[in-house]
Structure formats: structure tokens, C-alpha cells
Image (cartoon, rainbow, N blue to C red; front, side, top):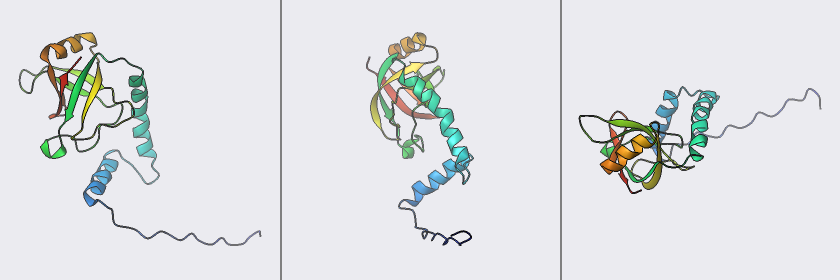
Length: 154
């Protein structure tokens, strides 16, 4: 019928989050990304990361390492490292600081705080950085602090 009023949709009652701490971290993360209710800011942030993740999936590892991400309570990240994520890889925990931009090859699986995985790595400096990391035998993942470590296996 033309001109008939549609029934208003019933709103679902608000429920309390299952994990209030996780919910608070998600909200803070969304605010940091500038997310709005439309979701456009979040979509822009994700779209900025995805091309790098797709590009990394096509790359061959310069080296392979057993990675141990520190738990959040032990100084690790507060959120998962998503595919496409990278960080400086440091040869030692202290001065002199020597580091190279590196990207773990995560495939489609995020790397969570506390996770341990065998991963390939690529480096901005290519084989030069891989050779130095191999010689060190172990390197450290840096985000303003050490958030994990990697033991070279190949």
C-alpha cells in the first residue's frame, strides 16, 4: 500500500560484554584508528594494511625463525600482529642498537601476544640483513621496546 507506515524495528537490548577488559581494549584500538559508527575509518585502516599483506604472501623467506612473542603482561603487544605487520628486528637487547626492518610472513593468521610459531622473514635490506641475523643466531622484535624474540633455524 502506498503511504502505509512501516513498523519500526525493535532494538535489541544492550548486553554486557563477555570480557570487559577485551572490550575496553577493542574500543581504545578503534578510537586510536579514528573509527566512527559508520565503520569507514576502520575500513580505511584495514585497507591500508591489506595490500602489504597480499604482497608479503607472494614473497620468499630470507630466513626462517622460531618466534616467541612476549605476553602482554611480560611487555609484549597489547593486540595481535595482523598479516602485513612488520617491525625493526634488533640484533641485541641493548646498545649498540643494530636493527633492520623486517616482516614475518604470517600468511592469513595473526600473531597474538604469547604465541610461538615458526615463521619466514623478509627484510627491507634483503640478504644483507638476513646474513647478519643468521650470524647473530637470535634477534629481537622491537616496537618501542622488545616485544618478542626469534631464534634462526634456517
